[in-house]
Image (cartoon, rainbow, N blue to C red):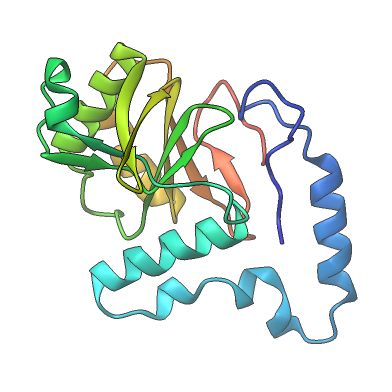
Length: 195
């Protein structure tokens, strides 16, 4: 289990996770078999041949290992948000962290490919609006949107998409990647922090 979010933090980007890192490092050191260590054990998406299934496996891994299954999908129907002019009939994020009003999208295998421009455009519109009408279990809900976070499975994938994502000019769209030890890292010259 991981908890790289600090429940007392006001923002998702300023958590005090040093304790988490120490606890997980101690847990890893205590395990008998090197194959049980997080870096080797928890990258099942890399063994999946089908690119679509690989992306789903990566998303599931992130939800279980990084979000502790506490995030939810954000489904934003265009018909309830016509003023935004979304390109998709239903824009759906991989995860939405309600405590921080943060949209998360997990990206696997983007070393040579780009994320969809239409998705990035829709997320930018949602950020600019500040809130959307979402649907969960058939019920309409107003959800605030304060940040959008792209988490790539590799640094190379993040770097490959950096120019496109930064072309929005938004200071609230963040690019993350997993390092060799499966720790999320913020891709930015200003924030060389390890999370």
